[in-house]
Length: 315
Image (cartoon, rainbow, N blue to C red):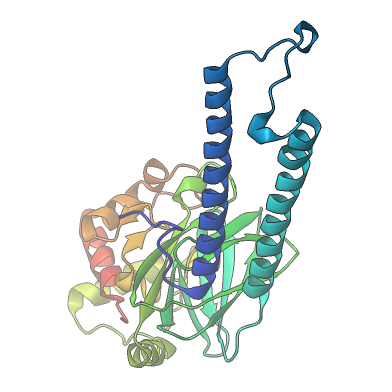
């Protein structure tokens, strides 16, 4: 099921949905009234000519000036004032600072999301793990062009503008995986710049955070060890980081826990061994315009590299 702003799973999204429904029902009432008046006018036909000696038509018993004043001035003013009040109150509610939040930093890049937890020193990409019921404060930055952070079921859109840090906050009330999306056109792969917010029980989140604080252990399996060696010797290490290895690249996403992610390339393809193999060999064929070049690797070395990366699963 695609995420919908009309299926709110947090207080911020619920506030936005309430505003949407208020505008919807208001617009529907206005539409029904206008269509009714048009229908009545069509049924009654043209009014009598006052010069012929008969009285002019009086809609709802009102003279024309009073009718225009009420229908064209007073009613619109009441509706627009109500909309303004609802908008201001809702905006203030959305901008209120949360109490005791989990701090998360998100940096938008062409075309993926860097995610870090500054209080814990944990870094990941394209997935934000949060505890259910706890407010989350997200510090937003862009390293290239304007992006927009949007999780329809949790919170509205917030722009990431280069050189101008921004913040947003949300609370996930129900455990689950919520798809987010860049909501500001940012280039050729804008549509494939997705991310996921994974809300889990507090205990599970604490265990995940503790596991991510430690670097993955050195593999003892011969194939996985060969895969790690390949990762460190190939161009992968120049662009990506895997904690506990010599790979310290910052061009691409941190891959320390890549095996636990549900997708690759920011939601473009599923995270399976076959898709990972295809991504390594032909990244431009999968996601044209991204920064990753094709990796020239022998078949046996590729198998070991894929097995190693898929083993980097820290929950």
